[in-house]
Image (cartoon, rainbow, N blue to C red; front, side, top):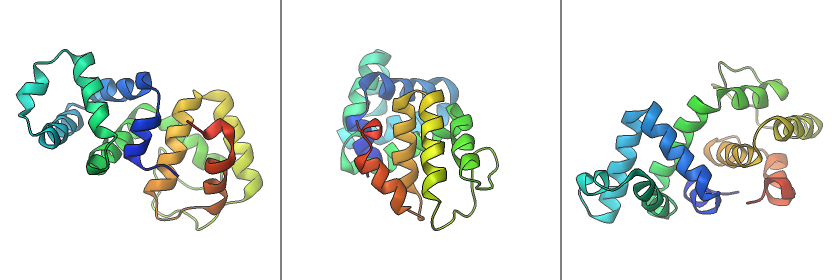
Length: 164
């Protein structure tokens, strides 16, 4: 099971850049908070990062978001990206497992899910959505929720389709 900062370290650079670009365009408040976190970690002012061309800034931000000290910032931007850019993926996953949700958001998760439903749902997600996005979502879901399902954890460790 990968943490949020580890996901930034392992995911393709293009996907990491897309996550930051999405926040830049769609959620300026989240983007500014992430820039501030990275600037603080680098011990520079945010204006230093703001003056860099976006591709270079984002590459540098990803390098820092992949460090343990920025776990909170990495998790926050991943959640924001998933909830805004991939709401349908979240909803399909939860619906496939017969978990009641509102636009992919759940108040209470069950302590376990059926193995067969999980496998069928996973296969459907991988057939419909980009594999890297599904991988990031499932790793994030398992890491960020209190109800960590043993069967999902086993799939994340053993299913080659879910490895980075």
